[in-house]
Image (tube, rainbow, N blue to C red; front, side, top):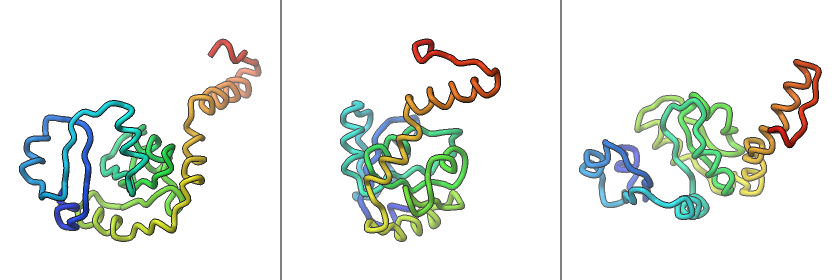
Length: 153
């Protein structure tokens, strides 16, 4: 919030939470709160955004992968699951400190020409359910020397 207040660039926040009233009070006019949105609206927002901002620290975080599946780059804090899903310079940018000035610097560094939406989408496929099922079957096969039929997963 503070980074985009400083930048003056548009920021759209979808979702809700207990901090929303406090954050809305802090927001300048360039920041728009949508509240809860449908899955279809979320997918549309991701498909039309310049980049998806993921400043939190989560074990995995499905939202950045969803944004990448829409071909959009992700600007994420370099911690937790983002280190496993965001490829610096290929699918997005990472900032190293959870500080408004670090996020603002990453947003300023975003070069739309640097990112190929098709390559970003292809990278997201590695996190698809079918890829997970295939990798799980292979892991079990190697560890237990057994084959698990696809229909059992």
